[in-house]
Image (cartoon, rainbow, N blue to C red; front, side, top):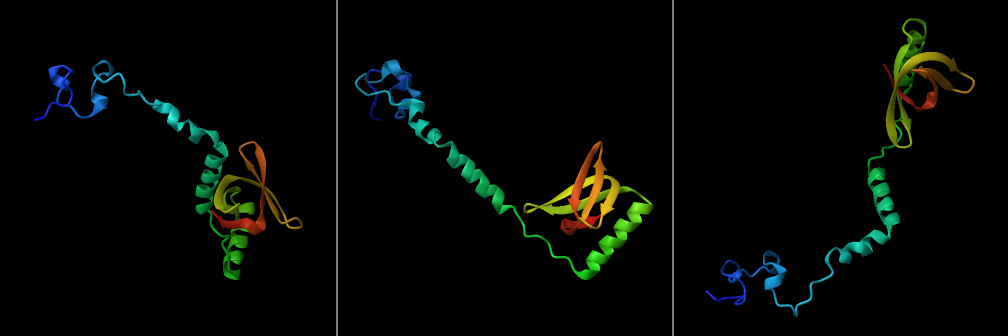
Length: 136
């Protein structure tokens, strides 16, 4: 076997990977290199990372579900029942490409503005009736 590093101790004489050899046994004429500095250029464009993250999030978005007349009638019946018998409600609604859930107590339904007002703990939330997908 050929001796690669003749000036190094016996344990490093046959090692060809310079990263495993301590710096004092290497040829001093070989430059050390830039180390981590070479990756600094990638950190100069934080907007690029933000844009890539936005593209990833946009891939998970869905189209707004289109409900049939039967489904809308069933949602209406469930809402009326919940208003008079069991005010605790879980509503699934569409917002910005996602289906979100909210749980709370029904405060009122405004047919003129087409809004459902409900209390989520102590906060009064408004949900547009046309965005509601499911009521439990």
